[in-house]
Length: 157
Figure 1 (cartoon, rainbow, N blue to C red):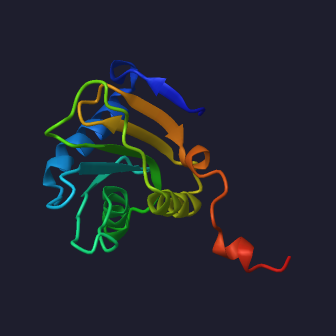
Figure 2 (cartoon, rainbow, N blue to C red):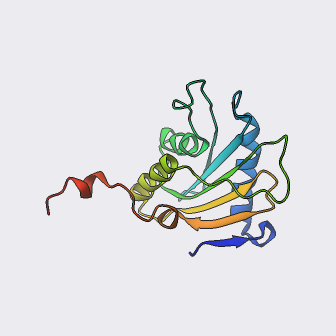
Figure 3 (cartoon, rainbow, N blue to C red):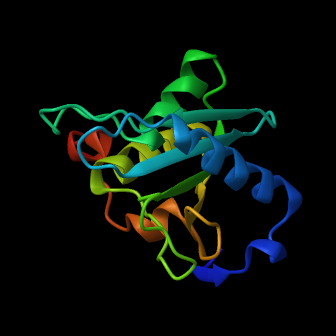
């Protein structure tokens, strides 16, 4: 899959549902400081969807992004073979149809990459704005072309 801007109406039903679930769970974000709302939904090979919402913290560094929350939810439920993840976000007070999609931060990209090594899949990543009017379709290998791999870094062969 190459990186592409796609219309929400052109997405498969499964991916449209995944994005809507990410959009829906974004209202549960605890964002007392930034007012930024992010929700994520991870689709596993079993067909289950696990959601996660942004959880901000006054120290900011201890905040938990929506993507790891969704991935941890899948792992906690024993269904860690993720095939796709949707991320939806923005500021609800200022959101417009022209807002660009929210993409995972560097930390989240590494976490998605780690999940891809477990599921042995180049996880499909769908990023959208709060209104789902702009959608970016990509993969984790495109978002993180040079991931840190502890095993490769510590293997002398």
